[in-house]
Amino acid sequence: MGLERLLSIEEIYLFNRGELYKSYTKFGAHIIEEGTIQGTFFAVWVPEAEAVSVVGDFNNWCAEHNTMSEVSNTGVWTLFVPKILQGELYKYEIQLKGGAVLLKSDPFAFNSEVRPLTASRVYSLEGYDWLDQKWVSQRSTSHLHEKPMLIYEVHLGSWRRKEQGDFYNWRDFADELLKYVLEMGYTHIELMPIMEHPFDGSWGYQVTGYYSCTSRYGNPHDFMHFIDRCHQAGIGVILDWVPGHFVKDAHGLGRFNGTALYEKDEHGQWGTYNFDLSKTEVWSFLISNALFWLETFHLDGLRVDGVSSMLYLDYEQGKAWKRNIHGGRENLQAIAFMQRLNEVVFKAYPGALMIAEEATDWPLVTAPTYLKGLGYNFKWNMGWMNDTLRYMHLEFPQRKDNHSLLTFSLTYAFSENFVLPLSHDEVVHGKQSLLDKMPGDYWQKFAGLRSLMGYFMGHPGKKLMFMGGEFAQFIEWRYDAELDWQLLEYEMHKKYQDYVKDLNKLYRREKAFWENDHDWSGFEWLDADNKEQSILVFCRRAKDPQDFLIVLINLQPIYYEDFRIGVPQKGNYLEIFNSDQEIYGGSNQHNSSLLVAEDIAWRGQAVSLRLKVPPLATVVLKPQSGNWIN
Image (tube, rainbow, N blue to C red):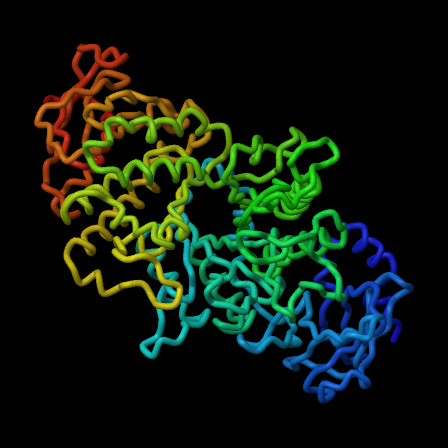
């Protein structure tokens, strides 16, 4: 048959230009069933090769049986095998001009062997009957910045395991993980990388198969089932995506044609190769990969890993780096790549999430590209995370001298569209679990953690919590064992889980926490400077200025029977949430009756009220309509 029908010279031209944005529909292995034409089509980019063959079980791994042809010196090699090879294992055998022979997995493979085996598997992605049409149609018109977002970050291999220690599969997750997320009140699940990777200890961040949904948990159709079930239940799914670097394993992308084809240099910190973003073919490969996950699996967005490492030429490079043409350290090719990536994604999927993990003060990460921004719509607030956890780790007497660690974030809170991350990176490598970071005795640790969660929920920005944090996992996260679910047999851990569940529900119920999340009109300090008592008081507002909440956070183990705070307007206030309730493990010091604002000016406010302030607690007040008698 004419192979140009399957991959035309015009499409190869676009691939070489960096503009074939659905290259996964042309490259890799594809089952062809068109009338009397039945077979499997292969295409791979290997410039400067002497010869390329497809080898596999179907030809006894013999290169002579299925040699490929290069298309017009483009570096693209193709082959049509007149046989449907669904499920067959294969690799590319690449003969270099110097005589060396390489055996490589397919960069565009849709499925792979279970590690430590490394062959690609021919797999057709057709044939799944999606039932999430309502979710997908609503998503395209959703105003994401004005919606609640509570993300539950999950490492699938260590969330839960079967009794014998085996991994759950996608259909298990569709039942148990989804049920748990719904019960806890989260809005989204974020999956740490599920692209094929050889080493469990990389947590998925060192990828070999960018288009291959890892075979650890089942096949791609099982993954579709998981996503479909989540969407039908109203839960979004975000995927961790790693476009900055890839693993060096011999069967992967590294030295694919014997030279640095996909890569530019080595990443000093992670022992991987950095993608060469000066090559437009790499643009086609990566931008297509982003669209692949969004289109093929209906994913709701991507959390883009390691953006900082891509933006700076000197990131973890020591002295081995060269300045850009302007004499700076900015990676101009990476900037242009990210801008194009986001333009293409949002043109195809206007309701998608593109979340940058960017840890520096790079400007305009979430600004549109026409304003010279990078074009993401959210960014992890790493500054908030670092300052907050540093503060919470301090002993109580040290806190008054470090009060600004909690208030400084408001000087830049609206410069970007932020997600507040309490992520996996903060509970590994000797950093301690969230609970273990807290100072004090057993009771104070739990109370302190509840106060942290109150600050986390009240602070502007969408929310992300790594698994285990919601029931106060005590030891650090281990990738090779399930979470310590047995802790829920202990009263304080179960009460803390109930606290997080109720706090999540409060957040979702109250528009003031999320509807006006990226503008000063949604936040007002009522008392930012009380460092002596380590107390913060602020107001969160919805778009309706009369729909507001007062949030007070006490970060010392001291109880105040009669405490005065300024409030924005006269009237009656009701305590609608208190982390010190006995049901959450607290001392049960709460405000059970209505609180009436008095004509006493306080801390810049014309009126104020008096209330009980429990130790190490978060108190949320809401104004009440009507005439009330105290």
